[in-house]
Length: 378
Image (cartoon, rainbow, N blue to C red; front, side):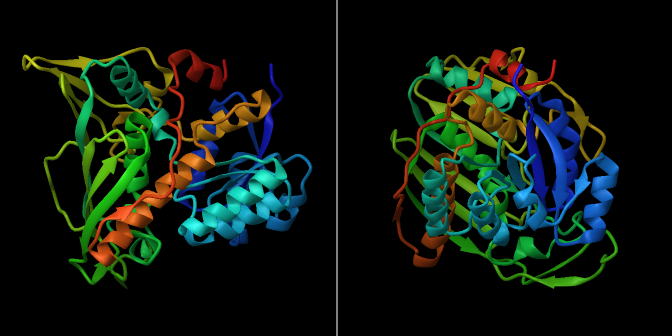
């Protein structure tokens, strides 16, 4: 049995609770400390989950912390990850990994010079439903993929998030905040993207916070909130994605993949589980399933409905990769390609022109049910 890897968390916002609840499910990980700017929140989370409250400086020098989980706001990801690497520790970041491609290159060079690993959310593509879709595609059950659609559309975060300001500022918006789930799944299924073209608009210049202590407060919108893009993958597949916070309701499936011999209808890649449907040439449809642990319901959503939530799977896989000396599935190269695609979509909106994608990556290895079980505690 491998020794547990000590995890330190920097950042104590809403997402830290999810990680701290779920990380104990994974065999290789032990959360040992938490740090952040808000001392009261740090102390509260440390007390709630039985870990040590530290300053960031203390965590960077702590001998029992092997990898740091970066849960700071997106505009701080680069600076914090850089500090972690300079301190000689591995780093796993929430998405988006960085907001500028050149920052990603700098972190790549620093990590390589230090012999350290960097990983990044999202890891939901490692979920049971999405890995089943991967096995179906790899087995050629729908033939060569010619196209796909992805839709992530709602009216935004202001209705439920107590502090939604950053979602509507540069560095936020539906492409950088929500599209990583969809793009990561598309890349793990279809491979890297060759080029993109996109257009954007902003329907609402302000938003009203709908819950929490700031309910009723009006906040400005200073980033595009309605983006539609076409992506050309290196395989030749053409994929459209609609990412919008200007939509009250729609009937689009989260993701559909079209092949020469059939189609796949996928669940929301923001989550680990869900229903996967295979449609064949004869018009028949079948719901597919398999015994994958990351597809089993283990929690509830905000409405009390059961769901599969294995947040931390990417971090656990990276920790196992450190011990086994192998690449991890949420690698820096993979995350950097997603950043390249996202920032190129936004740049295409500004330029109103095609953008060639300069980076590439390998598809992460499929995560089999047996490999997923190995990441969990017995």
